[in-house]
Length: 204
Image (cartoon, rainbow, N blue to C red; front, side, top):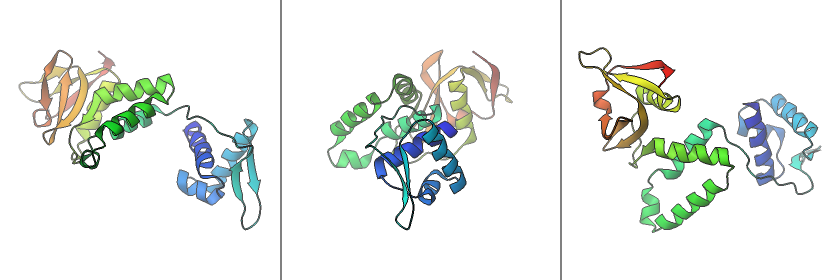
């Protein structure tokens, strides 16, 4: 968690220039004391952190320092994938569909291999083919976690006709969520047929 915050802090200073500790604290949703400790850690790591005193003071990177974005946490990469590949009516209306695809490709390729692989995997595992946001349902998050951890899932587990699946993909289409079983990829199961679910504790 701290490593991700330090990287975020570095990128804020790189992209916005001089910022106060209060501004950094607000952006990163931590206390100013935490920011000061983080800046000390960045300085000890050899980053050229410069602190200016006075009314127009603040913190900035010295020597025109620039860094390439080198990492995202797994959940951050998944979130980015959903955002990047979600349909956008504005893009279509403006005739920018092809430009958006090129921009998506360039952005994904700019990441290191491990992050890029996580983004591509999430793009295939979690998709939403609708401009409208799906309604919240705790089972969706539970099934997404089962896909990440390769756990088997029993749908309708308390019914007389339970269905055991090995979920490999979730997608939102036709105003509902669907889960894809590895054994029957052409027969996804809609949310209305999930009922109560049970997730195994061991990998498939």
